[in-house]
Amino acid sequence: MEQKTFANLLKLVIIGTGIFGIFICVYVLPACGDIFRKMYPEFSYAYWPWLIFLWIAAIPCFCALVFGWQIAGNIAKDKSFSMANANLMKWITWMAAGDSAFFFLGNVVLLFCNMNHPGILFISMVVVFAGIAIAVAAACLSHLIRKAAVLQDQSDLTI
Image (cartoon, rainbow, N blue to C red; front, side, top):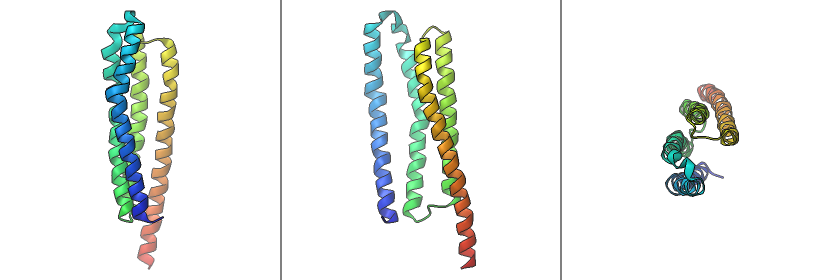
């Protein structure tokens, strides 16, 4: 597969992920919150704090998509192994780790404010674990891209 084709497919996946994420934030989260508000009216006061919390937690995800778009652009220019891509992956690492920490701490704060259930806190650990896994994978990729960029620079100087 050519660089341009690979980059275009990557951009297509990023667009699809962005559209799906917007759909979840705009339609699915409020609809699920509405269902829970009707099923458990005693927790209706927690609807807006939870919705705002989840919207804020989604912001780093969309920022990571923007960085992914920039990485795909660099791949299209045949600059797959560059320091720019390594730095973008490093930013994705920090955003995933920070978002995981924010999500965990937000769940704990909502629990202490009596707007969360311990079972929800326990289940949300799956999301926190997934965020940490993404952060670790992005950190590994950033490290490997950085090492490949150094090797490529050395190779370009030799030829």
